[in-house]
Length: 154
Image 1 (cartoon, rainbow, N blue to C red):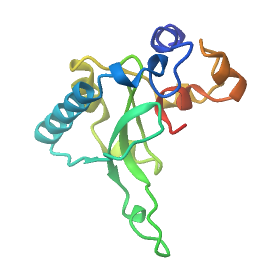
Image 2 (image 1 turned 180 degrees about the vertical axis):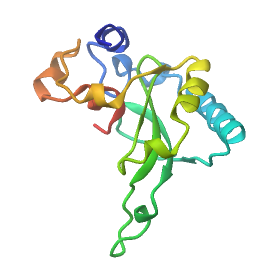
Image 3 (image 1 turned 120 degrees about the vertical axis):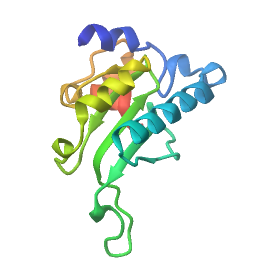
Image 4 (image 1 turned 135 degrees about the vertical axis):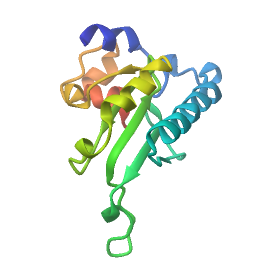
């Protein structure tokens, strides 16, 4: 996996490669992710919520099914996905995760296949929970993980 990480990584970018928002293909990637969402919903009968508000992050979008406990707790919205797909701003990488240990309730292999068929490479979320040792020296100094590098808010 280290090879995939290094190939997708960038020595100067934080949220996007080379911090070049002007040339980042946001619209094209968003359209691809929407096609993926529709295909998963149509083929697998799963309704996915699109985050649509990702900012200041190393990923472009999250598709998810929220656990019922997510909605209201003491008047505060808490986002707790049973299953979520995150799409990185780097290297067309994607991952699946759950904050409720509910992945086994969903057709994970079929979801991964659909997304992979659209040209995205799957990265196991568990493998990302280790120190970042990539190309970006500033991020190394910050002591982040590979999860933060590719799939989290910065």
